[in-house]
Image (cartoon, rainbow, N blue to C red; front, side):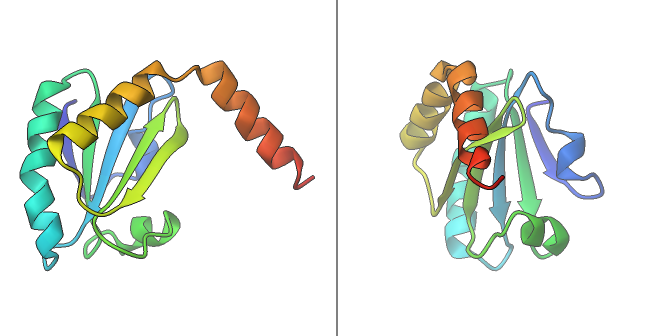
Length: 123
């Protein structure tokens, strides 16, 4: 899967434990979202091994609420089911490519240890 417009599925159904998933939360009335759409699609074409998902917040307000989306566009990147990047606003193609490269280079053992440590403060 390269580019998917999420309609009836749940976000959890496409987050694979062995994949990188880039999620664009957008709205049809949003000018910056329309500006970012071709960048998102071009980047999706350049990375066929990564799942790119568009979530229309007008149609999927439930997912937007569950993800605490307060502004569109908001970009989220998950690797191995862990949220590793979240940023509001438009990204250029070079910025998005850079973030994806950084995501690929993450040491996921360190990320999991950091997440476990962060949540241990709540126990």
